[in-house]
Amino acid sequence: MTAVRTRPRISELPPAPGVSFNQEQICLLEAFYPRNKAYNAQAEIRVRGALDLSTLERAVSHVVERHEMLRTTISLGATGYLATVHPPFPFTIRRHDLTGLPDGEAERELAAIRSRLQDQVFDTTVLPLLTLDAVRLAADEWALLQVEHHAVHDGWSFGRLWAEIQDCYDALAGGRAPELAALPAQYQQFVRWQRDRMAGEYGERAVEFWSDYLDGAGEVVLGGEPTGADSLDGHNLELTVTAETFARVRERAGELAVSPFVVMFSAYALLLAGKTGATDFCVGTAVNARTEAELEPLVGMVVNTVPVRVAVGAGEGLPGVARGVQGSLFRALRYNDVPLSLIVRRLGLAQRRGRNPVFQHCFSFHDSDVPRLRFGGATAEIREAQNQSAKFDMNVVVIPPSPTRDTGHARMFWQFSRAVFSRAEAVALAAEYERLLVRVLHEP
Image 1 (spheres, rainbow, N blue to C red):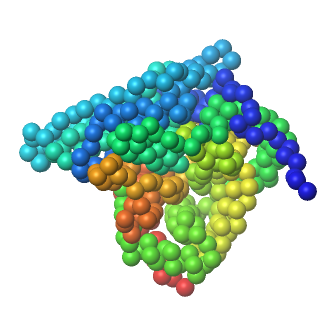
Image 2: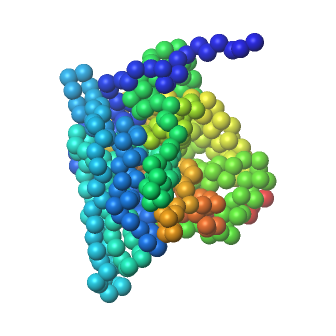
């Protein structure tokens, strides 16, 4: 007997004129914090070998034509934020040639170019919201500097974008037209589906769940009262979790029957509890909210940040906290596609400028697949970057080892709000987490 589908597919819906809840939250925050760069995403792709930039431009242009989100602008209208999908356009890669400079000077100039690009502020009413600069360092070495607005991006999209660019480049370089599988839906259809879903029975159940889940949760206050909260400037640090330590994270996770993410998240929770005395609080974590198969090949912002409620008893160690976190996380993921802004609005949670009403601290794994890039005979390595901004008081993003990154170590991005922490305090907190992690990995 064939099951009857009770809700329409995303591909069956007409495009919505507005924006997703995810995009709307970014637009509102940018209205509060004008000219901030916290919602830029940036990465460097180091290419070694012969690279044809004209072919690369054509490849990117093909992907931009294919994904409407990459040629969409967002503006504020009388009824809210509106999305405008523009016709396809030829994508341009800006060129910089540093081959005439000595090695040390070339790297300094590359750093200056990188800094200028990462500091750019996008106007969401004007295309493009994705830029790519090619810096030539030697005859066979390039640095591709990518910066894009978060309204068109999430971690899943990043890997998808470059996988498609690579496929298109290889086809065009071989004299063939790119042949990518047809997309089942476009982003504005997702917007329609999301808005309808949250306005219906599912949304009502979700609000009921989150109301019960968050009821009675306390708040973690670490650092001072925010000062200068008119900006999202941050102290950004990058630390390395050695291959040996991350191997132990995996071993410990196996011993406790939890994931490596839960182990490192729980150590973060223990840090917060130990510094503040809090015993019942929420920590945010970014999750891929692509709950439908039709969303998997889509480039666009579908990521969501969900609160994970944490309980830390007096003197409790990693095993108990980790098992509690695992259970709490499983509960939260039942409604992982419900936007945080909608939860706040529907529950009538008090909002204050410069403070998130549910949590001030986040911990996430950026473990979406990234391709092992090759452009013809050239090889390429992707490295995500930071831009000295912070969306929360303290935010940690871990990039764990993966088969395509050819490394056993993990990278940890630490982002501290300058309105709350000094740089010295930020450095001390990150170092304290490192010591705590190593200690709890070897405790019984």
